[in-house]
Amino acid sequence: MKKLFKKYYTDLFPGKLLFVGIGTCAVLFLFSFFLPALSAVPYLCFLVFIVLVLLDFILLYSGKKQVFLRRNLPDRLSNGDENQLSIDLENFYSFGIHLGIIDEIPFQFQKRDLLFNSDLNAGGKKTISYTLRPTKRGEYIFGQVRLYVQSPLRLIMRRFNFENEVTIPVYPSFLQLRKYELMAISNRLNEMGIKKVRRIGQSMEFDQVKNYVQGDDYRRLNWKATARKGELMVNSYVDEKAQHVYAIIDKSRVMKMPFNGLSLLDYAINASLVLANVALVKDDKAGLITISEEIGSVVPADRRPVQMGKIMEVLYKEKTRYLETNIEALTLTIRKVLKQRSLLIYFSNFESMSALQRQLPFLKEMAKFHLLLIVFFENTELKAMSEDAATNVEGIYIKTIAAKFVYEKKLMVRELAKHGILSILTPPEKLTVNVVNRYLAIKAQQKI
Image (cartoon, rainbow, N blue to C red; front, side, top):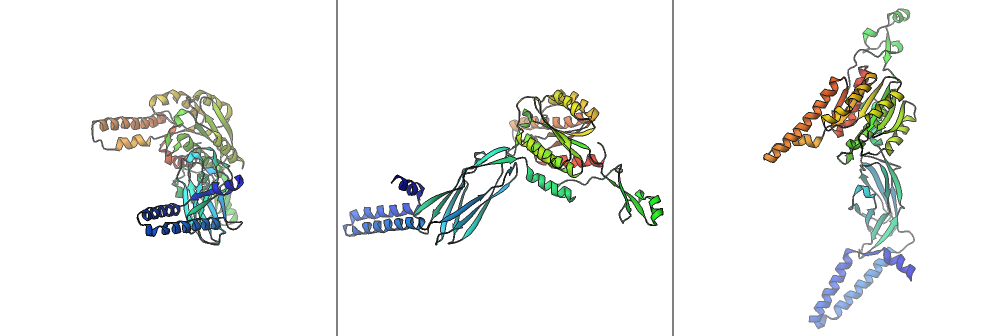
């Protein structure tokens, strides 16, 4: 008896029409009290109602195989991107059914209303697609999928439980990485907002002597080869290869600030991943250093096929720390690990000039031996406040203070330039495009 109760009762729930039927019977019983001639009608209606409920129960439990459901999850999710998920459904009942589907998605998404309603004909199939956008790296636990089925009578509904609990890791934005990789391979980065930079002079790395074709630079004509072959020949050059490009990520408390759900650290991680991949496509060597109150991870620059996997795994595990950056330890590590001139792209954030001044002596020391590019962030909310029209005295104060902070960020750019240090002041959402643009510009101008 206990097994039967567990099998049937715990998976049965009332439908909306069940309450309508109960309410109708109650009203008829009430009227029969005042009209004795109609006393048989409520009993007859109640009997019909009970028969219909039993018929609905039999319909829902008829057959050995009723419905099929499969949730399609990727092996991993991409942080900060819309990830596509889907649920496949198939109806084995001999009649059309109404479905209610609840997917127990991880608590990190904070969605309590992910309910899908659908109708499915007899023998029909359907796929329901939806997207999820994670904003933190780590492990996400998906629970079961609850499927509630109603027959055409819709008096009761039966619950089916599908899929076991599964854990899916959320990695740095590999969807964004693939998008930029395809554009870089096909030389279509301009479609992503990457500017085409006019090359100054020419690369010093000789490639080959080839036949002249229309559009080749006539200044590269090789007159000796032309005389030997009796046709125009030109020297071909390629970008200098195997230059070292390091992304240095500050993971101290200044990178905890959120924008559109993502922390500044996650924006920096996603941009570093794309930068490393573009550098490898351009035949340079990509490396990584993370820093907080102590040195975190160090991935020496390389261009072997496994390099992107190493960088991805390191970035997946990085978390924000809550102490101040030990810039001195970073300087010593760079002197120890980096044996040749490299491009150092340092992702950090400075909210005041005094914060920059504390690190400036060490930044100048790094810039003596390497090409240093500092990347820090605009506070877009303060910038919006400084541009809004003030309507009262309080608004004037707020606008003035916001404008002061915005102006101080611009002063930081000038201060860095005064000491020969390159910089990018960027909104978080444009970080990847701006960093890749600057890397390609530096490479085209042969500054490394």
